[in-house]
Length: 458
Ligand code: F0G
Image (cartoon, rainbow, N blue to C red; front, side, top):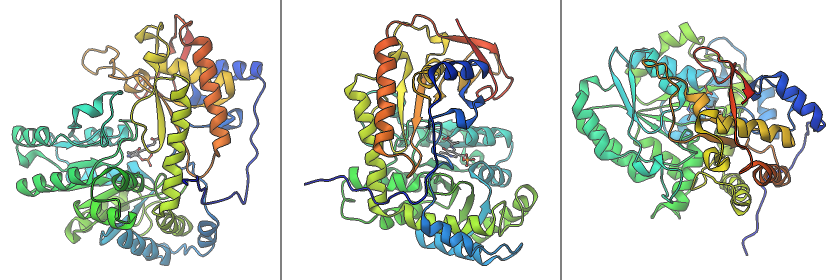
């Protein structure tokens, strides 16, 4: 019989409280209906991100006590480097303070003006850093990955024909590197198959190109390979991770996800020449190349986190929890991006609020309504996030207008998530069809408008 096994129990707890309804309405209005502006103590269940929000284990806390805070050559740095080599196989590691810092350092070295970075659903900061360095991100995700409906086991896969035609069109000299994002956050936490990574490597070799892994959720990706890809069911997560990484030249990592730490990241590389070139910008932007913005304690916790995140019972529970939560919503008729991914459930807000005009930010509206109904904080991944076309100044209308309900690692129990499902169900039943209008900008913050803008009900 398949029983659900939770491979940990709480040892330290943090109190949370639900404000009364009127108070929630008052506070979200005071924040201009933007959930990023809320104080976290005003939130009951915080599902804005899975980044840096996981619970540390007792073993991680223990290792943090022996962190070596030496400026150069810290013992904790060597421990982290050794663990990355053991888990992922890369010879050299450069710590950085988080994922986007890895992007900045790597792009500073690899991207020259007008170069391109083909890949699969580049994350926002990843794309922005590529552009900041003078390059262009070209999304080569398969067509199935662009649709919120229909089952495909690996919606994060790269369209190999498209990749090759892009390389030919621009010429290999103008390709800075190929980026493989595992799993695809922007695409709903969709995984990438081993076969696809292997094929991308083959194409890269043909044109003499580097393959870089955005490894933020590498362990979750490995779990999907084990459970969905023929030939991998009997392999261990360690074997699968090692094989995934073996097809790539380097990894950039936001350790706030699949290294189970509140803060940290790294660039891990195979080649000693590339390693040498990364050192100077790291010193400039992040700190000396054996700490790069991380403390010794952080580096110990990261090393231990890598050991824990690749344990199969952990991953089975983690991805199973997201799935069970998604199934509760589906059963209530809430329209979701399919299939369910690894770290979050994405609600298709245009199908949720069937009568709210697309220009009135249905996904942002849904986030606000969820907070009012139950003190739940989700995040908009849609029109507000994507912004305006830099040439025309018009609002870009994205393919999908989504509300992401992101599950932190090891933090919430199924009971918390049952509560959240009940909140979503209530909003769906009471307002899904009834609401005819959404939100409009009160103050639209320039540039990255997601975080600071304020909204009014239409
Ligand atoms: N790559 C992916 C796939 C990500 O999801 C993120 C962050 C980054 C890179 C950047 O890492 O935040 O450590 O600088 N995603 C977070 C999220 C912010 O909420 O999805 P970072």
